[in-house]
Length: 357
Ligand SMILES: NC(=O)c1ccc[n+]([C@@H]2O[C@H](COP(=O)([O-])OP(=O)(O)OC[C@H]3O[C@@H](n4cnc5c(N)ncnc54)[C@H](OP(=O)(O)O)[C@@H]3O)[C@@H](O)[C@H]2O)c1
Image (cartoon, rainbow, N blue to C red; front, side, top):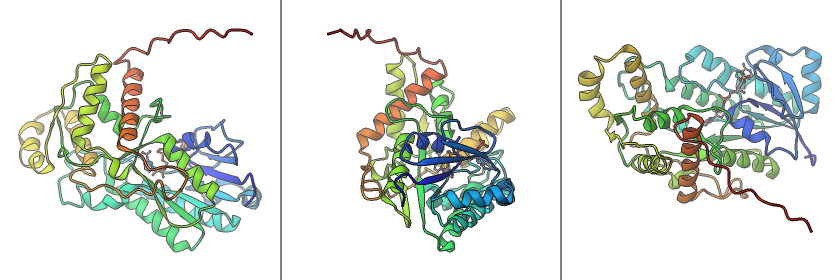
């Protein structure tokens, strides 16, 4: 492999792509952009992964394949409410196009999947629970990501499947290029809009900072990894739902936000009592929000910890400790609270005087 390999990065403008660009300074990165430009890449090429040859003319496509050593495939429909057709069109059929390209290029593929493919059976649809008014259908997303993984494995190409859990902000600053579903729940907690959380207290809530995900992918590339599944997760260091709420309250208190810890209730009680008695009479928009939260949080209720590969694969990115996970979560809550103007920006620290001589 060349010292500075040429990497085609799809999804470069996304949450993981943005964090990854900062870690790929040893590579020549060509971003396959879609709607959003990506000025941080060495080169940009506009394309659409749902179109043949990514919508490129034959000459451009062939010339690209001749140059690329590796593909990091991060483009995906990540919304749970885009519907099965659009979700599969990019996450499954688009992955097939990427595999064709990797074969044409003789390139190693780093395919971004999700740890939640392992929790497919926990969706409300698969548990036979009523989706109610939810627009969020995690089963569409998870079906498409499972199908993408199956294609990658069946291709026989040199490829590593990367499975992050929920991506949160930078481990120190909490910054992230776009807020995620998890941020929506934290925001609602900070504003006192969640009277209950439909997850039993002991359930593990696994998240991983975006810089750790980026460093893990960069390390896989540097190590020349070209097979296997890599779990980029907190694993056994993930806090319980109960601990996440305690931490949120603690950080909120430190920021001067009064927050009450909501009750944690199992999905059975929600379905038997809370939805029929308290939720059914609410405004349709409020009902839909509640049912969306039920759909998303179903993936955590009573779930066992994910495996984690960190510390082994890649060898150079250590496993996260519980203290690191909690500190990263606190950074995310703080950044979100400030970005949403729920807490004042930090006052500038004392000016550093540079003394001459
Ligand atoms: N974020 C997480 O918490 C998380 C957790 C686990 C796994 N993952 C996986 O990690 C990968 C990256 O996720 P992410 O959160 O970074 O995604 P994201 O922020 O939702 O970004 C999606 C990316 O896909 C691009 N894209 C959309 N439609 C496209 C098309 N037709 N052709 C080419 N590109 C297209 C988007 O470009 P435009 O914006 O220009 O359309 C954007 O750069 C995905 O495979 C996701 O399943 C994410």
